[in-house]
Image (cartoon, rainbow, N blue to C red; front, side):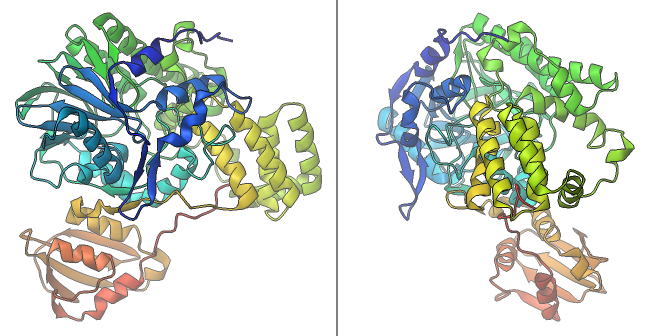
Amino acid sequence: MTELRYEDRTDFDDADRGLIGALDPCVVTDAEGRVVWDNDSFAFLGAECPDTANPSLWRQSQLCAKHGLYEVTDGIYQVRGLDLSNMTLVEGDTGVIVIDPLISAETAAAGLRLYREHRGDRPVTGVVYTHSHVDHFGGVRGVVDGDVPILAPQGFLEAAVAENVYAGTAMLRRGMYHAGSPLPRDPRGLIGTGLGQTSSIGSISLLAPTVDITHTGQQEVVDGVRIVFQVTPGTEAPAEMNFFFPDRAALCMAENATHNLHNVLTLRGAVVRDARVWSRYLNEAITLFGDRADVAFASHHWPAWGRDRIVAFLSQQRDLYAYLHDQTLRLMNQGLTGPEVAETIELPPALESAWHARGYYGSVSHNVKAVYQRYLGWFDGNPAHLWEHPPAESARRYVDCMGGVAEVVAKARAYAGDGDLRFAAELLNHAVFAEPTNAEAKALLADVYERLGFGSESGTWRNFYLVGATELRRGIVMEGSSVSAAGMITALTVEQLFDSIAIRLNGPRAWSSSLTIDWRFTDLGAAYRTTLSNGALIHWPAEPAAGADLRLTLTKAQLIGILAGQGIEGVATEGDPKVLQVLVELLDDPDPAFAIVTP
């Protein structure tokens, strides 16, 4: 087992470097006084690591909990510790460019105020989204209302909507486990996610990009600041980019190189990332910028200074993703399945001992399973796994074979007593899914999850285990987990709005219905037809034509109002307006409060 060098304080020195000032208290509230961010609640991390936490994760959380305004280099500043991510501010000729305005408008606004307190009341003259995850754009309306250039990688809007709108409800629910939002902030609960402390819970917004970054080598000048871009699609996000400030010798690595092993597939759910191209883009970044960068900073964690250190850091990050990819493929081609690969792979000693390669957010175990999934999917080739019963049905049969729930609980208690928590959890999960009202099984499974969480080096593993334990003991708790994403909808295209309707359509209830609606948008100069056919809502650009049951002439804002339940007042109609109501009544309202650790 690798001995970690806790006496090495380099990361702490780097995380403290350049501190200018901090919020006191470090608490952000919304217009109604609701707390949306409280970094002071992690003050307990100043103590020695207790036996309820992995010492390595405790160390990482101590680093991530540092907060304030920091100088990165001349004219470049970062606000850290005001959300899950960092907000970077680059001073231009007349104002300041904001890179990645956090998750919530409230935290982004607080970060901008902190910057202005120390650097003057400079206007925001541009925004850069490094990639399509919500912690890098959601707070944009906290810093601007529009009317400035907004730069993003090509495909940004499509990727942002696919994750945060199309699959948003399921990801929100799983994200509660991922971020540990229902947990108390104390040594037995939430101590961080490894990537940052947790997510703010304010108002999410989205302004569409005005400038697409389409190719590596593209140069843009924003408020007199030259920026050279490297596009990196398919890495940490489907649409992502690194970029270099040649006049300041500063390299932004977005979220492609941070101080942890990242996720090839997040536990909250996402599109599987390509570890192979991730590694290659890191190598390309070294080739393009390594001999010119004096500082490298990212959308999370703290910077690295000095060319030799930057190249060494990026090289190890490159090797990390390449090794996981290539060794998974090697073992996969020898017949090992994803779980078998995960139990087999060991990192080289130089990577295993590097703090920035530790699995605080991702993990070797679930990352290699993701590589397997990317190439071969969910099926491992064993016919026994081709048509298994769903979890509750399978659990009842397993429990029956083992002599009933009481016998399963007894065996699980013995395994837990022997320290085999993994198999104890597997047995108890069957018991709970077979008999969800069994208090003894639920209580013992909660205890096992808690012990697994306390030992986890990955912040997200810890959070999943501990939130699972909480829900087994108390039921589903949604308080402190909700965010408002209403501010995103205005940035969606009409096609994306129609997509959002289609994925809410209750197919079985719609089987026997058919209807056609023509939509003309006066503000966009565009027209569309939607047709309900065989339980599917189909839409495409089309001028009004014969065969429509209803024709609507409206604006995009009025369509958003219809989706919000505001009706069709002010919308010009031809045909039967009741057709629209038929469609609306076939839509499900998504509910994120679904069960996870019980059937």
